[in-house]
Amino acid sequence: SNSKDQSAKLWDLRLLRPPEASDALTPLPKRHRVWDYRRSEYPNVPGRDASGQAWPSQHHVNPHDSSVMTYRGHKVHYTLIRCHFSPRESTGQKYIYTGSADGRVHIYDTLSGEIEAVLAHGHDCRDVAAVRDVSWHPWQPILCTAAWDGR
Image (cartoon, rainbow, N blue to C red):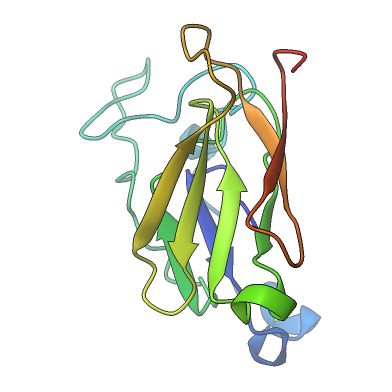
């Protein structure tokens, strides 16, 4: 899943907590819940909000995070951005790929989390538009992007 903290996460559903375990979790302080990815960039660190309170690190690891891998390098801003596994038929799902608010497609190695490629959306990169979704052809080396620029 893509996250509002500018990462994509891989989850093993067998490792998720039962619902009753959520009651024991400590929620973030209110000052950390006021940021909205639809209206502003993710807070850069070190940084402080309007009241002077420090924001958590951009790469802060939540102590309750039960994901098995985190992928960083793309941007989530203004809208939800989807991420997917590459096709089983042609790549063995070796990659995780996602659009990005920076107008590019980011491809990560599933196991290492390393960025394998960053591809531009379209031919004219003067106007950057968020790439909301990407689809990888199951047998051909072809990616199709859907972005906010109408192309």
